[in-house]
Length: 391
Image (cartoon, rainbow, N blue to C red; front, side, top):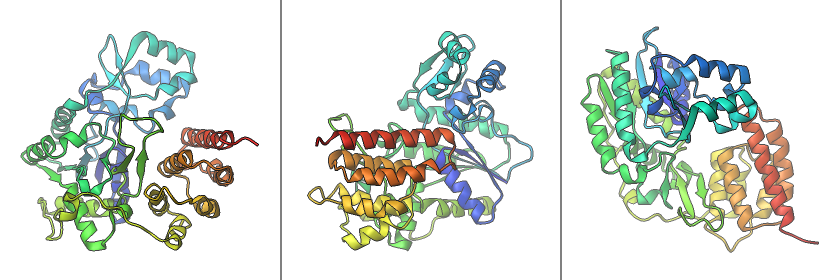
């Protein structure tokens, strides 16, 4: 069994490996600091408080055992795969015992006893992004010690090449300043550890692009947009976190590395010159946009909505409303629709919200907390749209 540890990228990769016939297990991690500060066990008071409050869902799958303990050695896994996962913010530091853990601050609302304990015993902290690689290295050494002889595979993170623009972005804060320097030094260090292998996500994704001919927008369709008036970040950023076509290729590399004990790249797995040059957006006709929006795929629909931001002179309200019944429930896609609606408010878009709300209300696959937050965002969007016009 291959154990995957990290963020949703490792979850997607584990799912791809399972689809290819591998036996897998996945667990989410919140930050290297939770393991590095751990007392060697799950703090019983913290666990008891969460159980009593019914607040476990506010761990958002970062279970306490996975936060405080290394992966289990029994049954013996065939490999452990860890990625350069982003750290959750904020974290909680127990003032007296010194351990650090992740819990969504919204968990305070579930119980006054839990809220009082957090206020009295803990304080909220944010890990310093500049020392992330040091923390991750120490965590990997702990994993190496806990699982001697088990292949340890570290999956890299995509670098911020200008051709993957506009303004390539990922959830790991500070990665834009680390990826081409310290990040590559870290990869070299990983490769020197006994029984440890580093997989270069840049090269693997470059191979996907070469074999499929996919555009940047097809591979990375999600955009992040600054709120109106926000100047601290670029107004438009390319989300490199969710690269759907990467995970099967990465899973294949993992399987071959476990089988052969070597990391071998194909001839086409070389970063193309186009990624080194400035980004040039694609331009799709309206028929193609309709097909993408109506596809039922969050990746394809996001590729279409992404076009809207590069063509501010055009009105795409009619396309959104017409395709509303087919557009899937997805936070990243909703973020883009909300951002476009903020820039192009129209009362007709309220019809899109009403249709989409019915789909979101029936969507339970990601849990109740996800559903509540999603519906709240739709309510806020509808209120904004209706408040933008007077009659």
